[in-house]
Image (tube, rainbow, N blue to C red; front, side):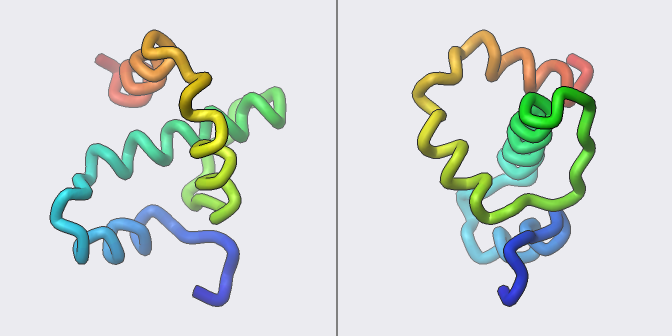
Length: 80
């Protein structure tokens, strides 16, 4: 990719090459990145893309994310 961002549709297309990656996992990834940007911006952000450096930020802080918060992100995103 020549850009530093990828849309959800592009990500889903590329993920088809990896049979263990599910659309639900991609939805969760986008929900987490939206939450990340919302916390940084201090307001609600709805991005239809992911910046590649978001992966590094998530990986570096993944162990700090409590299970409860991960569950809340999923619940909020899917209105469970």
